[in-house]
Image 1 (tube, rainbow, N blue to C red):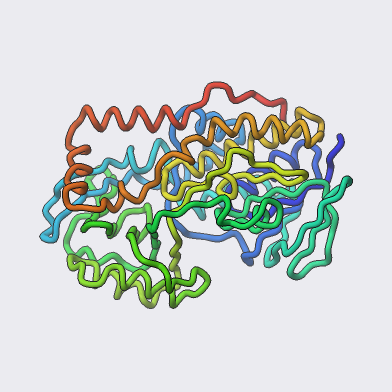
Image 2: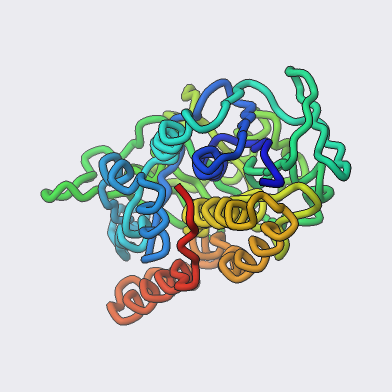
Length: 393
């Protein structure tokens, strides 16, 4: 085996999935994660189509995911008087299986902790590549050399910045933002569950804005378009100010929702972004998951992360650790699989730019033929028949 020692940055989804495959197949794997522990909570993520199902099965986690899956939740799109204009079904929003991101991260950690060394509360600060490896410096631990470094550290990947170049060269945004907030949704006496246990969330649009309250996708989800010249992604007060300014005067139940969330500790805001990469490796560094193929709220990111981790590990095992051959094969396979991540973005669908576009979006979900067509398209994009059955433990 030409490569033995591998460093993975990021312990959310792609990182632990990759670590499990590699550790069980003879590699010495370390995962570094800047958070102090596996992050709980977060919005719901989903899997759809035969390919995602097959990878979950090969990983041995399908039963665990099903055991912790959320219930299907329909989005009722309402007007200011709570009149329902359309219902976006849970099968479209949540795929075949939906699970909270934190719960999935916990499953992946449990399935990989025996196969890799986890280092929490630290992060990569520098990388120097040579013919024999990569010397890595950290914020806290001593520098160390590795054969390969894998960036599984999200859309704002430090590994990508250090190995490939500035984020602006690889990541696009379109002026849309999203915020996930905890805090009880102020829904009053509106029903939040059907008799069969199916959940109900309520969405309210005005042009360029969506407020979604209730359900398990997120306690409160806001999507909006905004001028962000004064926004600082690293400052919580700046994030809250951007959100509140974007929803000033919107009415409905939004003021009460924002008020309920002001004291909550769980607050996340970021831009809707997508990567524009078609090669995910450089030298002894590779990217997996959102670091290489993100499309925020696009509906395919988590499935792509697990598929990518499976393919990268499978190619390294097949090539007996020859990273040059393995990385070339990984790039070739993922270039096709990630085309959905480079196609469109969720902003205009979730927060249409005009009242007319809101009506047209809603009409799509009142027409059974159009809805069936959209469901078929999403399943087709998520399915790839040419993923090898790698000879891995």
